[in-house]
Image (cartoon, rainbow, N blue to C red; front, side, top):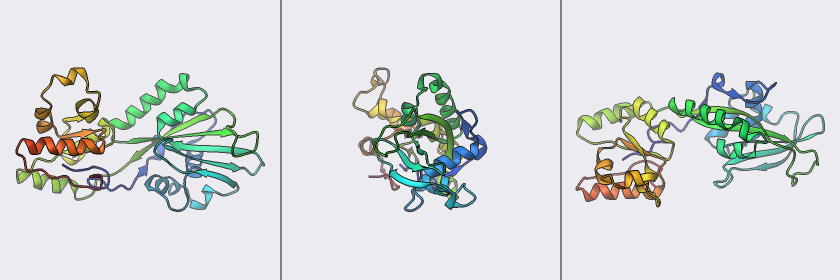
Length: 265
């Protein structure tokens, strides 16, 4: 069993500028990139910040001509970053980037754009691309503590984490030796399947929550879960405790089973 991000893939994210989907009239793809870069750290960056700031002609553009007031770092609850700043015109703005669901939840026009947002996310996922959303608001009160004016959802950016150069060959050699390789990833199912297709691990993958979660899916509850785990090429949407459960069930069936990768937690 193998983790995906950083094990089968490089954990070096790239963004295809041409695929950025703009939602706000009068805004360009370059402006979406600049807003996302402003909502990124310029030092101590994670993989997403590095990819986005790296799209600018000069990384200094991320803070050029603005006065930084407050930066909200990423945390697992909000699942977004934000920068409050004063522009060259003396007005205060706030930009945010993060998980599409969280950014969509902020948007003043969520009901009108929700369906289109999910359609774009699905389109990206089918190509193995993760989605990142960007939004901005004015802060007319001029203080960092105030909630500000309505949020404008400006765009969706596709993030691609390319497979490691040796992954497909390593998997092919393992399969030739009779080793069964399963990909176990926290990413969504469509991304897992696309990575499996590229690497040769197969696309017969399942979401782990209905199989192993607390509230098991009724339609799946009747199925022989151990058989499914044994025959599956992998699992997506996996939590750390599910990884343990999958390995435990395979070992109970007398398989010699290992789990590799930095997501073993």
